[in-house]
Length: 261
Image (tube, rainbow, N blue to C red; front, side, top):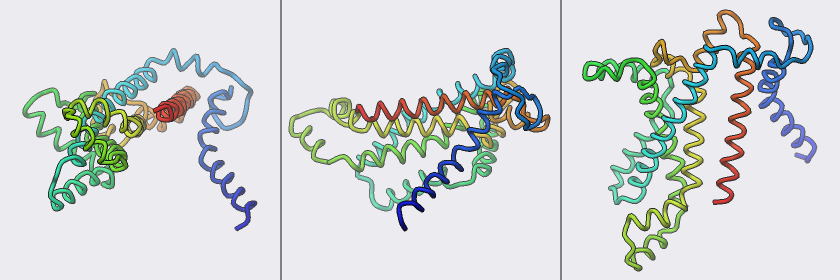
């Protein structure tokens, strides 16, 4: 294949990838409230967005859910990756652990959501904190985020040379000192990448959030879905555009940080 067809395929792929997001951004500054006709440029929908308490509440719930669940999942996922990679597990146990970690990644979201609803029903008999609310959402998101963080951090751990640990042992460094001064700085790019992936997955999750949310814990994807019954409003387009820009900013920031590390 010559260079021209490859270039055309690349440009066509980029257009298909970003055209929907570009369309949302364009219609967020369109004066027309209904329909697809262009009525002129305006930023009034962004002003209306800041005055819409329901949208702002949904956005805040999504942001809080993503941040809290990402921190918890990153800590647990990193610890799990270290335990699986640095402990002398038998091969049979290693294969079992690998399968258990991959199950949340490949299982359909609807199956995961139904399982979490049943689990929450059992846990509610123990404590009322497991009622369908923001707390239940955080717990549900952490359950599938851990697997993604673990896989990303393990891929980073595999690339590390075992000689670094052996050299630290020869110098009588404790395991804790070796972790903080050697292992953690080396796996930080993997930890940041896993955290970024977990944050993104939590931010745009709909199925699990739909099954576990309560009246006071409506997230942005759930709000947008409920808005489809009445038709998407320009405020929703503005909110989606701001979310997209924030995600791109975080991605660029994460890339810059990993390069410096």
